[in-house]
Image (cartoon, rainbow, N blue to C red; front, side, top):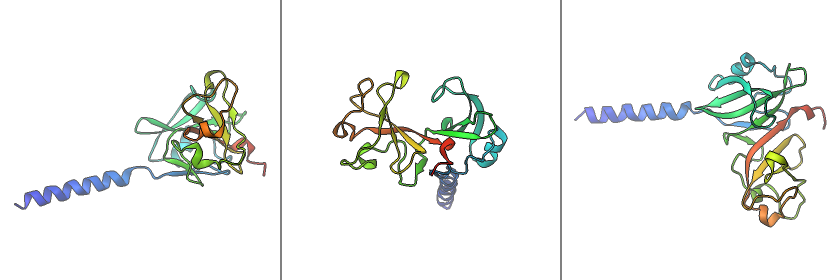
Length: 186
C-alpha cells in the first residue's frame, strides 16, 4: 500500500523538475533580446555563456538573409533565435525571433494577432513583403523603429500591397526582428 503513494510522489517530483527545467521566457525591447545587446560578441562561445539552457550552434541562414553566417539558439530542436553579425563580424547586429517564448515589453509574441497589437484607428506603417516574402507584411512595433513584426494571414497580402485593417485583424505574428544596428538612434 505504501508503494503507490511513494511512486506517485516520485512521479510528481519528476514532473515538477521537468516543468521547472523549461527555459524561462525572454523579453525583447529596443535595447536587447534577453541578454543580447549591440555589445554582445558574435561568437558561439559568448552566446552559449548567455544561454546555458539552450543549444547554440553556428550555421547558414535560410530565413532573413539566405546564405549569411548566423548563430542559432535552439530549444528542443526548434530555433528560438537566429543571430546576425555586424558588417565586420565582431558583434551581434540583429536577431530574428522565431519562438513564442520571446515576447516584447507589450506581451507581443509569435502567434499574437494584429488586432491585439495595433489600434484600428491608427496607421501602422506596415509594408508588404516581396519575392520569397510575398504574402506577408512587416509592421514596426508601435513607438519603435528597432522591432519589426512579420505577419501572415488569410487571405495572403496581394503583391506589393498591405491589406486594410479589417482584413489584417486576425493575421498573426510569425517572426519578430530586433535590429540592433539602429540602437544608436533615439
